[in-house]
Every structure is written in structure tokens, then in C-alpha cells.
Image 1 (cartoon, helix red, strand yellow):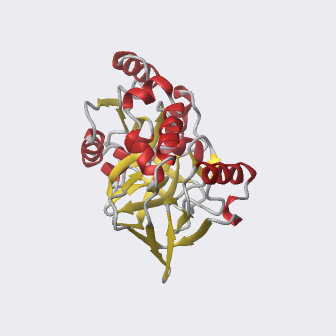
Image 2 (image 1 turned 60 degrees about the vertical axis):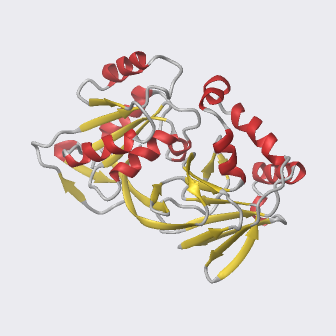
Length: 306
């Protein structure tokens, strides 16, 4: 819960306020020193400058942000902010799931899709002002076999790109690193995926699950998605060859992909994806095991928004 005027947390669009105990701590910031090209000391100094009253907790390896976020929530911090990319945000989300702490986001990563979805400023001081403003929205908290996520998930092509794009290439090339991996994977024979949802079975080569509308560099892949509607948005792509991907991308750019041949789009409360092959799964841009996987809405999460 974000602290607002008079110690109240105001839920945007909601009809209630939540009183905060005056003796509770306010803000913790969990930051990933590798989320920027600067040295960790530079990022830490920046965070201390813009948020002098917040407690900083630095991660030292994969998965640690989850532990740090869970600890901060147990200690009573009203807001636990993730300073990093979508991967750091996802780890913090998994630490906060099931708690009363609100999620804040300071976008300093490569893609920052979640920040774009919610209109969060790119500049850290402005993003911190959003967190301090006290405006909180409840959004759907999704799960993939127990791993939580709040923006999107992918099975097959999308997850394979995540798996094969190294941290070093992301650091050196930024978003271009994903395109290079995608070009290499598109030349391979795709897996056969079975999607069980809403009492029907569908087949495809790769599957995307959306909570919000955006994917990647602010591409609207899920036009019907609402972050608080209690539904999964499911996109099934039948093929992943070069010509197919070019056609899909053109459709996305024109806003017509959901009606194209070879594409299936629907909303559902739960979906299971299976395959006879070993196929990776990603959530919020981070690998999360392999098939089979069941996606579902697991609850709600409070998020600091403009």
C-alpha cells in the first residue's frame, strides 16, 4: 500500500482507502546493479539521491530479489519498489505475492514492458514521484505452474528467444540482441503445441499469454486485455517461419493480427499448454521451466501508478 496524504493509501478507480499504521516503515527499493551499463555504485548513488528516505537492498544474483522482497513485506514496508528491468520486477512480484505490500517500479532495464503498460515515466526521479504520490491500482496476479507474473508469458518461439539471448548480448546490443536470436530460431522446425482452454483444444507453434496489452517495444499484441479483468488473453500462432513471422509482425503493426489466418486469439480464465517435445516457458521475460504449464489468474496485486 502506497502512503498518501494523511497516511492513507488511495486505490485509483476504487471506492475505499486503507489506513496505514503510523509506526510502520515506508519504502524499500530492491535494485539490480546489472540492469544498467553503469557500475552498481553509480545506480546506488542515483537511488540514494532521488529516494533518500528509502531503504536500498541490492541483489547479488538471480532469484535474490524474490527473497529480499518477501523479507521487506514481512518487515512491514508499505511499498517495495523494483529498480531494474522486467526480470527484476518479476522477481519482486513473486516475493510480494500474497502480501499487503504494494509494488513500485523504477524502470532501468532493457525493455521495461510493464512500465510502458502503466504509463510509468522513464526518468527515475519522475518514477519515484509516482511511487511517493500514493496512487495504487489493483491488477490481476497471474501464475504459470505456481510462478507469478503480471505482464505476459510465452511458450515456444518467444521463450526460446529468451533462453538463447545471453546477458552479455543484451548488455551490448539491447533489444537488437533479441532480434538476432529470433532470426536464428526461425530457421528451425517449430514444436507442436496443444492448448487446452475453455473446453476446447487448439494447436500452434508458439503461444503468448497476456495480462496487459503490450509486448516488447510497446507493440499492442492483446487489444482486448485489461490488467484487472480476471482473464488471460491467449494468442496462438500456427507457424514460425520467416515469412510467417513477417506476416504476423505486419499484422501487429497494422492492428489486424488477431483476425489473420494462422492466428487464434481469445480470453479465458485458465489455459494449459502441452507438447511431446521439450519446450521452454518464459514469464515477464524470464525463463520459467518447460512444458506442461497451466496459466491462471492467482489473485490481485497492488501497484503504484500515475
